[in-house]
Amino acid sequence: MERAGTIVLRVTLVGLPVGLLLLYLALAPDGIGETRVAAAWYGARVVSSAPFMLLSAATGAAFSLWLAVRTLATRRFTKAMRDGGVPARRVKTRDEDHLVARARAALEPALTRRPDLPRLVDALLGTPVDLGAAELTLIPEAFGVQVSLRFGMDRVPVTTMPSETFEAVLERLRMIVGVDDVGHGTIELRGSAGSERIDAHFEHPAVDRRDAYALRLVISRRSGYSRTLEQLGMGEAVLARLGAALEHDKGLIVLAGGNQSGLTTTLYAAAHRLHRAGKHPDALVAIEPHVRLELPFMLQLEVGAAETASVLQHALTHRYQVLLLRKLTDPASASLALQAARERLVIVTLEADGALAALRTIASLADSKLLTETLLLAQGQLLAFKLCRHCRSKETLSDEQRRAFGGLELPNEAFHAQGCERCGGRGVTADRIALFWSLERSPWLVELLQRPPKLEELRRRAFDHGYRGPIERALELAEEGETSIDDALELARARRLG
Ligand SMILES: [Zn+2]
Image 1 (cartoon, rainbow, N blue to C red):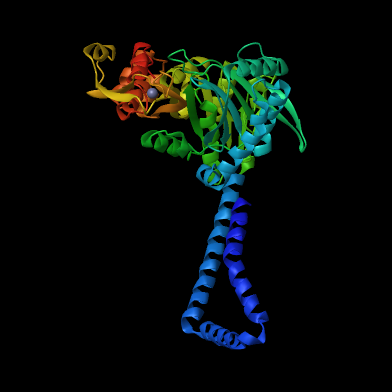
Image 2: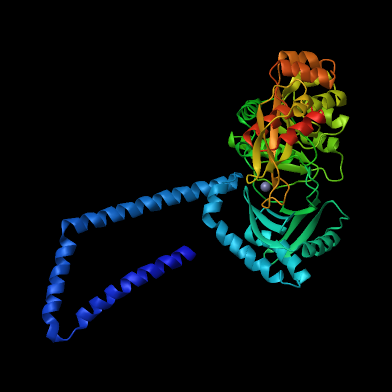
């Protein structure tokens, strides 16, 4: 709308003087009749000239082309949105500035010196819904609490609020949601266009190395768009392995990581890949503790207070081609999932230190023969904070650091950050980056899993076969300057073997 307004204004500014001149010539008294005749003759000559004709034709053609390209782009954009893809770049170029301006207009009046708390909370809860944002995040920073909205993939800072106000807002929201300190619940929001259930998460970020981040609040709408696998930053090899595994009609894919390491995001993105590969929404079913995002390309069953195994049992009576199971914890579900993987593609997520640890867990929960029969791929992931670009620097690894990594092959130099004003002295930003690693089915692995091996043995054998686990991946990213060498060191010291 703003752009249309600008165009109208420009046309008026140019057109008005010309129009006035023509009007003057047309209505001029007889005294300047000759001028009129001359102008009319000159005008007719210009209009009938070849350059003018050519120019008109070219302008017409260019306009038609522009219109066609725009229509096509709009159609593709709408389709991608409907399919659950995240055309984040397009969203950004289109109207992000406008959305941010609207969010500011809604929030800032309530953020005065003595904030009107009920009004502020209403505005905070209503803004993501009104603007179609997937998420509202409040993160304490050095300069105050940053309020940001997520549109598609992008988290956009909107405004800041004083820490005292944040405390009061948290207090009030905790009361509404019924959460004491950390945890999540739902809020029923009644807007003018109907009501919507919103998830509110009160959380300490998963990786809290410098202990400087206070509680953060994420309010997310349940309807949203999945990311694609390509957007997760897996690295080529891991992405290719997962892509290949997803092409199978049957078998087991294991996604493992710590609590809040982004497993659900990966699972949703994998489902989205299957959808893009032509799987009908009726062929995909997800069984989830609670539905994080309602996605258009699969059926989602919420376990809620029921037993995971009984929901799974129920789902297995239908002919779903792909089964996605979030948070595998119990032996009954593990057995059912492995049985199902003999005939269909089954993707499970479970809380474990990584790919190898997850395999050991599953082997202990269910029949390890079934595991060796069905396993396609085990993948691990964890989140690390992104290094601050303003104060990071490359340093030579000390002898002590080298010793801590044991016998690993190490780069000569890796990045580290001291902390500066921009990052509040922490050396890292609020953004996080995911580390992925994985292990494919192979003869030696199948043989080893016949009798559940020790983690060290599993890792040693995997390593001999070219396996690169979390420590290796962290080292790679520290060498590139994405994360700190301290992260890799911490993983090595904690013996996160993958
Ligand atoms: Zn910094």
